Amino acid sequence: MAVAAIHFIAALVPAVLATQSKVPLFPRSNATTHIAAIRACTQLGASLGAPVVQSSGPDYEFAATHAWNLQNAEYQPTCIVFPRTSLDVQVAMKAIFDAKSHYAVQAGSHSAMKGWNTVQDGVLITFSNMQNVSYNPVRDSITLEPGTHWHDAATALEPQGVAPVGGRVGDVGTGLLLGGGLSWLSPSHGYAADMFKELDVVLTTGKMVTATASNEYSDLFRALKGGGNRFGIVTRYEVYPVHTGTQDNKTWTGGMIIYNSSAEALLNATARYTREVNDPKAVLLVSFINLIANGTLSPVYLVTPFYNGPELPADIFGDFLSIPAVSSTLGPMSYYDVSETLGLGDDRGSVQHFGASALVGNEDLFLEAFKHWSNLTTALLDNFAMTTLAFTPIPDSQIQAGRARGGNSINPPSGGFAAVQIYEQLAAGIDDIPPDVQRGADILFTQTPPSAGLPLYLNECDRGQKVFQSYGEGQGLRQLQETYAKYDPTRFNVEHSQGPEGL
Image (cartoon, rainbow, N blue to C red; front, top):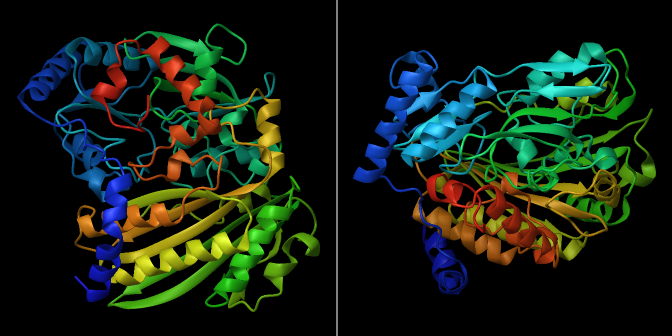
């Protein structure tokens, strides 16, 4: 380990250890969990049969080892359930509940959180056989099965001129919705979860309910807008569409601008945008990336500005356009083109790690975050293939659009802010997060805390961050706890699967 890394961590670890709660690697495997999983898998094999339930074979091996995060590709579930219908999920969940088995659910398999979408000595439910996407023009709604990836959804719906408020990276799945979901369409329509119309939800007992904003399950409906995997298994998402047009409708302007310097100017521009821009037609993602190869660090800074109009307004994007760039792909685009800008992001075989913060648009805060992130990268350089610090401005128009549809469990305050993603891809040959890297990340989180009252983004958090506690200055947490107690009174989910803490 480099001397710089030793000094960096040694100076700050005592303060972190005093404030950072320990998150157990739960659930742990032992003889009891093994027996419970065998019991559940035996029952499921008898009731659902092969190929829905598998404990070996090529389909089992692919599902068990194909998670995007290498950490999650090394678990070995006792059996894997490949449901084809909601009824299969009900049968699976009842058997898991009766056997008191550990379990996990895998939709797109793109989670960076260790253990959140797979399980050791337990039952994995994976939705690779439930990937249908459809648009109903009479109801004017999109229906997504839980195994859908956003690239496939966009491709299937483009000929009909509609799109979901979905993910920005094509390989990401519908789990994005349960964490709230940030989209290129968010400034005008809210978090992706704000577009829910109707949800079919299998509870921990195997009972299925249909939740809407106005029926008897409206509290569950709201909790699923940011509550993650804790409240049940959603087997059908019906969401409101956005009428974006087909590929022939070049109604957007934007693309990607690449820089290899001018970090301070870009940070200042991003902070100003976050503070001042509240145009629902404008959307921005700014990513500071360090590529590391053979001990050499190469900075690449990506700005992806889009505007639903014929040009990028100078009063909104002028600061970015005035900074000397290496290359640019700006031009007319369809919304489908916009949705494909970042590609699939589906490379497997590396350990991935996320962390989250949230900042008001203040230049000093953005510069400080960049400085601490850069220090972490430099101190632990040999551990990384890539590190990223990304800013997604969330304008007040997004927050108000969500409130107009009944609100969500994230419950952000009025006013714009930026969701901050801290991301590391570990170097080849590393199959788990090294202790030094986790300690360094924990230090970084204390150095870049969220601004007062701002929520963390669940889909881009570290497993030790208390995301639910950041919701709505505590009010959101209380509502989630009350709703969770109502729908899972035996606390089966939190005791038998991994996910966000706090319920």
